[in-house]
Image 1 (tube, one colour):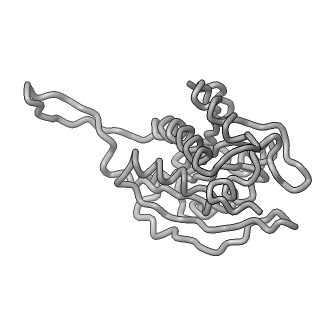
Image 2 (cartoon, rainbow, N blue to C red):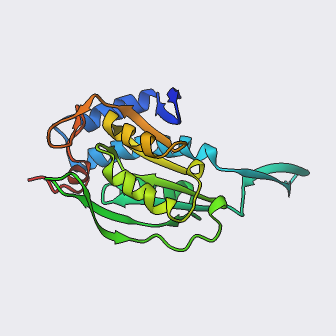
Image 3 (cartoon, rainbow, N blue to C red):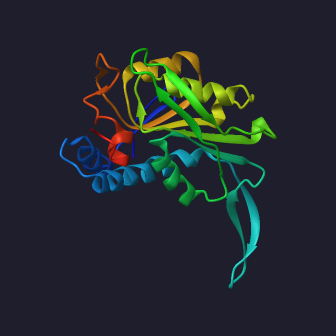
Length: 220
């Protein structure tokens, strides 16, 4: 399922991803079909991303006999951190797989002139044990990397090790990947595809347009 692994950059390779990514790129779409295609890819991305979570063994009684099973380490605190607003689709999928995880919303939007993020909401809370905290930061698009950089820095201030942080995105531009890898050695980036470039407006090429606008039908 993994197409490429290079310096903690993980690109998934799967026919379902390829098919639904094509659906997302199509200029002719409707919000319902776009949302469903995005959720299908999100399921595969998050499922693969959670393989790094630690497990422990425990004894369990089945109807037949006692056996040893593996479960998620109960001492680990799992945080889902969607970057609003488009990251919420990823978060909905993630909550289905990890219903006991805590959700901490990160609200920011991009200044269209400077391409820098402007914060309007931050729901990060006190971290009890940074070494045992695992964070999934989610945003469909990794373009310039500015919003992702701010989100990751937010958790770095809590002394969470980079090895415990995964950034999950639908598609990424080389510029965004470079910004994160230059500043956060050891951060895992998981994506469905690395696209070619950014245009003069900071949009990913070939990309799929504004994911948030397509999800919530706010294009004009």
